[in-house]
Length: 595
Image (tube, rainbow, N blue to C red; front, side, top):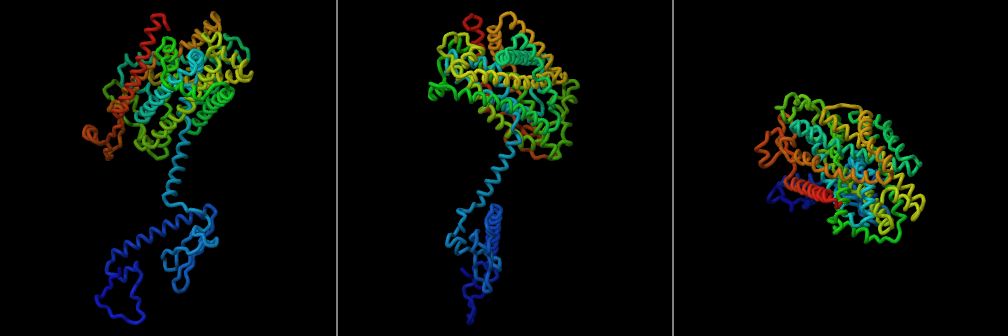
């Protein structure tokens, strides 16, 4: 509606009694003109963005020309143009003979453009975080997993797939806590134990962690020896001795404090080993016949096999082989590289590294732990992506490989004579006879790749444990030599005295030992992530308190609380209780001689 500036204006011939509704000068309501002009500028800006997008995609340029009397013409791909006086013009016809969209179909809206850009940004950032999840996943597909999964498949076919699924969920949850602990505190689990626990408790936990690493390394030695025996006919004793140098040269290239590019190159090498194992088992599954998909998927449901004596023994072995204690130290220690790289690029690194320890009452350890602490911006930018990348890696590759081992064993060994004492040698021989000669070779090759890759990450985890809990700095190859020397001795004795059957039983027993150790190494992880005094981040002088509720009142305005929510803490306690109950039942059965 027009509001003339005069109440009773004189109408002269030729005067326009219906001026442009957006002409602010012809009205007394200037606010309408301001809103309309703002709306016009916004529409013109959006149309310009769309036209630029279409030009980049190979479309034609708009051909908008105003005539001398202000008529509007908008023929071209955009279907709209701008006249000489700056107003938006809508096209009457498209360039293809009447189509309003100019022959290019439906134009993307500004929301679609923004969504595409955001999706591209998220995808590119996720790709930059790929690597640590594979490093952790390697620990869950080591030769110990082969032994426990083969035994479970031979005894109960597919009914223990539920334990693999449950163990994988437990692993994802605990590893997420590891990433959170390493991101917020800037220290791995071992360093937090030395910084915040009494010395006697720290030494006890170190003994458990070192025992777990030796048991894991024993599994790598046995698995490598079996693979070399099957592939190259190398005697088992010699295979155990050769395994001491299998990845010695590779470890020279691992520099956790080096450049991010060199670290990612090392991670990509480990990823290649994991993908090699996955390809091997894809081929193995393609050879299986007379097995329905429904029968396999029903194995992911709970069954009575879990509570049977032998089933419980094998379930605990699967649990220990999947949620390996040393992987918790590894997961909490490999996330700092990307946090440091973020702070370095943002220029925050010089302001960090002087943060004092949370516990300043302990002798002189406050200066010892006055090291790099990630900024709040780095934590918020990196932690979520690290957790997602790890969850995807574990729930795809680790779950697939462990399930594939059990499925291949269940389809090949169940109800077969001699399957009661099934081991890696048995499944190799059976796969070669029943499926194809190449099937057994590929299985052994996957075993060798798993042993090599798992040996690498086991050494890295051992390095973190010794340096973190004892402040004992040693080169990776020296660490490798020491742990392998300890684990190789019983392996050689068993291989020489008992032979292949003794090695298989030792391999399966080492995974049960890992299950027994798991509650002791996971308890401090849950404790640290649930405590306010450890899980807080300083936002610096003048920073805004980002806490809320009780946290904002209790904590300093310079601290942001990032401890576990009570729901997360409850799930953690439940998972820990399940692990404890399973191991107590296992120890009772072993004491009675049933398992």
